[in-house]
Image 1 (cartoon, rainbow, N blue to C red):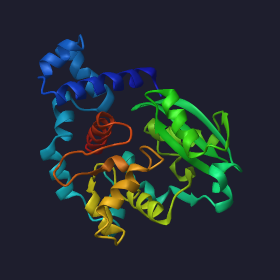
Image 2 (image 1 turned 90 degrees about the horizontal axis):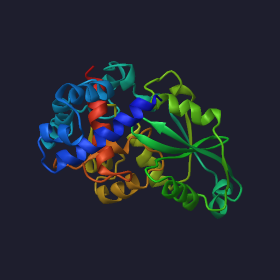
Image 3 (image 1 turned 135 degrees about the vertical axis):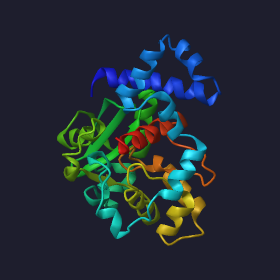
Image 4 (image 1 turned 30 degrees about the horizontal axis):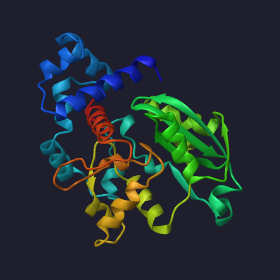
Length: 276
């Protein structure tokens, strides 16, 4: 991850926040101390498109269009065409292994978990792994809060600050390198219902969006949209299990554990990259 890409995200996030307050783009550029060409370059370097197009991707009308055009999950046609290498249907590769009762015992007293902080396209993140796979990955605007979240999930585990090969395979994805995706394994603690919801999210291609009701239908629990929302809200793996691709049927982006500004940034970045 290049420092410039990381720094660009912080500026992009500020732009999104200002845009939510209905400040015009010229004024936003001035607040960021950027002239028009620098402002354009900021977005093109980070997302591949200019600011107007990028912000259009996160608007209500565009979200509704994406929802109406998104293919049905699990359809055969989805597996035949891929918009780009970045838009791979990574559910074909990412493997989820459920933690055993022994591994979950007393909040992980039998587990040794390596963790470390890393810079990504969407801000700093904390990535944690057991010997079997990634068990937690969350954005870390405040490193102490991020570590507390990991500690809360595995309060009795042995936590070691260390980067291992399991984590490195995941970090390739944040650098838009999908070559290691078949080596990514997730080792997750969750109920049957939660795991079913999280697995369904892996089937949403980059550039597509679904509603909470869509996911409830996919898992054959059509009346469980609220419970689906709760399960999505407890997803322990940011970005890779793409809970950011689930939005409200109204076209509003809805909530996100790691902030609605980041959710908008990821959706805009993915939409731009699928169209490249």
